[in-house]
Length: 344
Image (cartoon, rainbow, N blue to C red; front, side, top):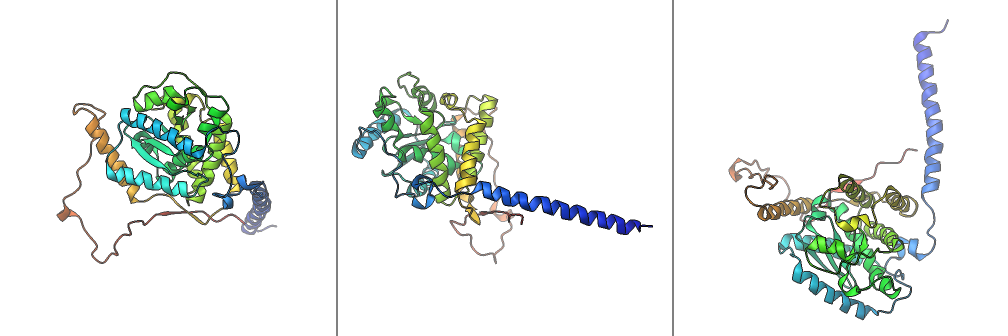
């Protein structure tokens, strides 16, 4: 007669061994599928900065491209409301410049924030880059915000604007900026920034949009952020699109963030980007910027607006307990997202 307790123990041990036998080969197979050798420089993140990602037919020299972008930027800034808060401006600019240094771009960047709740960002030829406060507000952390900016920097690095013009795909180039959510479309920018441009609705090349996703996630990774943050932010935008919120730019419909597009970005991460033990995620500055954005929204809305943000007062200084023995906080003390160890 079998001892009941021993029988149950043997069954449990057998189940554990069987699960391990099934799990380990699956994990090894997953690793084999995920990572592969880069096929040329454009897939090799180690060569970022030393590769030509903006090649192809282009009738514009870099100097002409910068002149064109500067002229367009002047028109944007005559009509859009640029955020003048130095804390917000400096913070967003610093993230963008770090990404630009870790990109293939050959032009300097001028990065400014537009005071608009609409979810949009756009880059002009030659490195003139604008991001709406709505995008900053939607981002869940600094890495997600950096993902949006990396996508824009990729458009500039690959010279999509002047290459498109040279292909004859665009008319009236000088008044139609490059939009994050859907390519070059005057209608989207007219709504996003509140200034008039031609109503010609010109679809931006899906090929170039795909390339901006591909390069942008590489730049995000190279700058030290978790590349999965781009996927996370894309999911946020996709959810906003499903809600059909008025804050989503009209250009969003031109190149929607479909599940397939998100899967392609994830596949790039899984197959090509070597895993790092840790990534930068966010810091206290990000939440400080979000608080300051709430104050901007508060000033914009009338006092009787039920949707007006309400800021809570902080407790008086004499009611806050302070640990006098605690070490001072570092100004750039970034929390780090640590990856979980793989199952063996």
